[in-house]
Figure 1 (cartoon, one colour):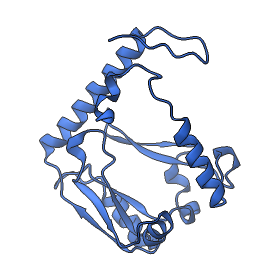
Figure 2: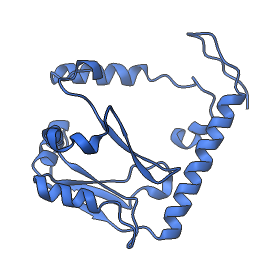
Figure 3: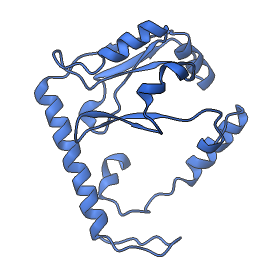
Figure 4: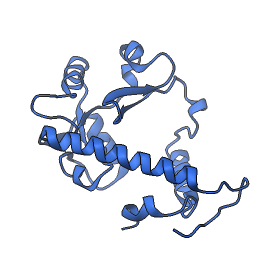
Length: 187
């Protein structure tokens, strides 16, 4: 319920401090680094720009050029929900996974309720973080997926673009607060 109301709540209404502490402590318990700067290798984060329906890579020089050099950083390749029977953005991912012997991991990358359940992974693991990660790394999973209709894809893109525009307009209309202060404004 809170997730659905999130876009209508003023900035600063929730604190993510407890989540940050949990992630920091969990990373420390597993000996993981909690800083991008502390990573041994450069980090690349792929995403989809829904406004342009194009893959965007955050990181110097882009992922495509260096993917093969750093494929050992990946435990699985994403199989996205966002495809139709005729327009399938997953084809390169399927080819790459087969070529390098990595499993595909079905994801919804959901921003809207209607995106849930269209693509997901069934993971053969116990209910623990360690077991789930090991199962993914060893390919003990299967993807459940059904393509979207073209009209549903376009609807998702349009609704997400409108939601992004709404957030941008609200951000411009909100008063700015001095550093460290949160201003709660009525709607």
